Image 1 (cartoon, rainbow, N blue to C red):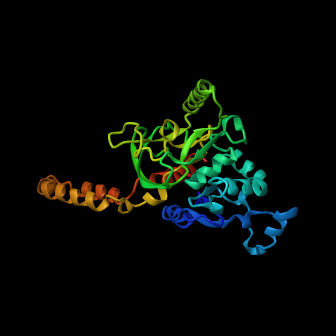
Image 2 (image 1 turned 135 degrees about the vertical axis):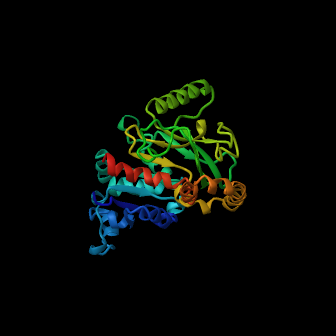
Image 3 (image 1 turned 180 degrees about the vertical axis):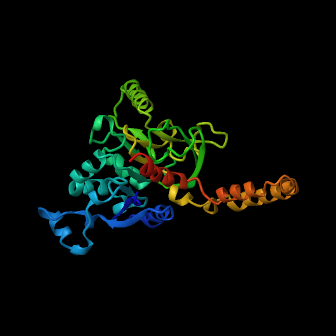
Length: 322
């Protein structure tokens, strides 16, 4: 099978497209960073005007790609709401193309701002194929930008194609960097409705869990669900990432592309120091027992960060299932 062709979308304000593209490229995929204007087709009004600014040789068609990635950043400056403007532009210019892309089973990944866009589009959580917005990613409880390592417990039972290579119950470490990452259920505000809203939240979570749509939850170093700072934004039920009922659309707030290599971890040098001490103590025994080969394999794995598993999983999906 030929390498899957991946479209990493960008507009003004996205700023993680290069490292996201490189993560796939390092694993052998064919990747192209594509501006939204390159995908727009000439039509009526403003779309025709914008599309006319793109040279014919630079035009692209979404259907020619196998995977769509909406990377992190601050698309359109995050005015109105984070991801709202890009979502509106996608719906207006590529609504039918995106619908056909997702219904064909092709995967879509949204990282941070990309997750916000997918929620704004109604593609996540995507209950019953609805296209209206059903949830929101809103301002962090801390009311400030949070940039910190996060620990993510893998909760999926195998539905999400982006995490099938990740053992269920394992904890991955990836950094987050957002001001609007609090996952909440879309609902009406108003006094005297708190009990009804609580029932709505419970029903929403029940559907997510029954459909195997909750992929990652924030946990503390012991692996327990916990509040701030382990849950950096106050998300409902500690949710860090979800997929649609079919499992081919996945969004998460932390950045897997920033955890592709182990050396990008904030504690990498400290961990390497502890590992060096351990190897020094056990080196003589391992040499005597002929474990040098196994040690080299373990060292190789430690050069890889936890985020790499997300990219590996979806590429394995293409090889095995798609």
